[in-house]
Image 1 (cartoon, one colour):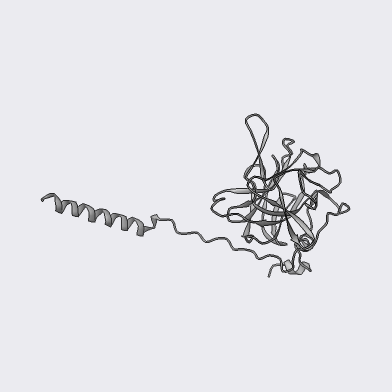
Image 2 (cartoon, one colour):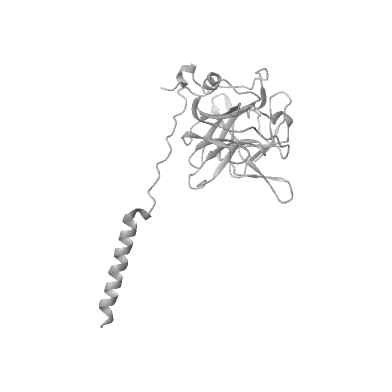
Length: 270
């Protein structure tokens, strides 16, 4: 019976230790989610690819009906995307978009027209994934292997980046299951990211490496295998439409209008 008081004392000391450790901040506080930028105030308008628009080097609008094993690139010097398990949905009453799952892929062959020292990437996206599924993970939106990419984080913030860790991340997130216009713009050493026509982050970044390797991917990223081939990884889940790449940096006013606003003034900082 002499051991019983010692046992009680040991338990009390242990419980006191746990209480003190917990109360002293050893449990990480929950992080606040990023601010969500609302969709454009006007519904997305129909945007057929314009082959006469200056600087367009890729334009995939997913209007192929039926969309089967390829998505047509309607830009000059077209490089069509090979489509695997890609579905469709209507983004507007008159415009079709692609639907991607964790089994989908859209890959483009290596093309010198996408080896760009200055560029703009723009598209519409409709994220439809669980935050837990992508926890601490990125999904690809456009990836030109070894050169530049647009990604979406698990918290639905947009990343515009080059080879390695050179990147800029949007200050806000895009909403879940709503259409948002996202843009990456790079010129003269500065990378900018726009959400629904509004600037959401910018950073100085060095020049782009021009590596001719495995081509590009829409709605995913590419990874080199040990056999020196490419495999599709980090798939985006949701809707995607009107993927456009330009060999020039679009004017911010043009980006604002492309996002569905009626006047560039609507995208100015308040």
